[in-house]
Image (tube, rainbow, N blue to C red):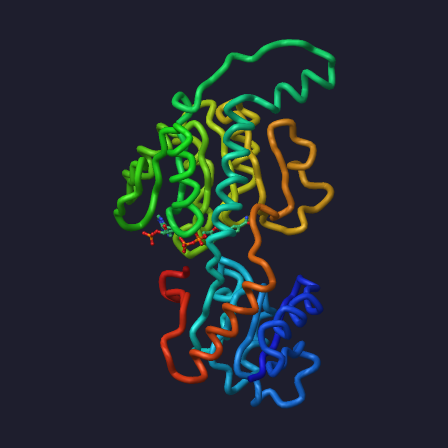
Length: 309
Ligand code: NDP
């Protein structure tokens, strides 16, 4: 079986090659430049593939994202008509949940103020706020959001989650639709975005959205850069309506050095590092998908291209 590793931004070739070799030494993983016979390529492993590149392979049977999200692949207007698969990793979801919990506590216990105070050698206790007094709203109750919601509920936070369809999650109030979103935004002190990037969610976090949020609330943005209208967030923080934001994903990555977020006192920047899948898991799940596709069996973790996730 042959695959092509297509990535506009990542230089992970050597690591992926090692991971695939460890899984199955008979599999050949080419870079696009190294493919001599495009018709011999069975599967593609992709991250932000340049548009039009995947249609070069006439016998492609499946395209796998190296990540949980597939927006970067579905964005290709010339994407071949083959199944698109995402990575699903329970450990990644646990790592994400811990990352989210850390940011909730950062806001709840006002570590931003303690850091400022330390720089000025100021000894001043901030009012204590319990978990029970800090409502967390979570947008997206999928593999990532559901675990974060359940872990936070287990720690005593009131948790409200937003999904497209209703579901049961222990300790979590689930809302749906635009009315459900309004309810959530009006009540959440910390708001976590774990939505996939789709036509419906692109640009969702805009001025109207922030105006609906509870005064003093805090945004924890872990989804995808284009969910957020960055200038609208800055206005919402600068006006004092929001306390601030933790941002892991951005419209442009890496975040340009001149971007206002870097030096903004209300913004905490991390470099899209909330939680990754391991290269070993990517190799195993990609090969499972490719083998299923080649033999005509049902392929695990195929996304719904119409829904966009
Ligand atoms: P899933 O596909 O498992 O879940 C998506 C969730 O979003 C589902 O609950 C779905 O609702 C909900 N949803 C989708 N569209 C809407 C909508 N229009 N309105 C309301 N709810 C909606 O995705 P994952 O949990 O695996 O990942 C979510 C996203 O997290 C990824 O796409 C990626 O953007 C981001 N991510 C970021 C990482 C980082 O390091 N920063 C790492 C991993 C993921 P329903 O259940 O009803 O279908």
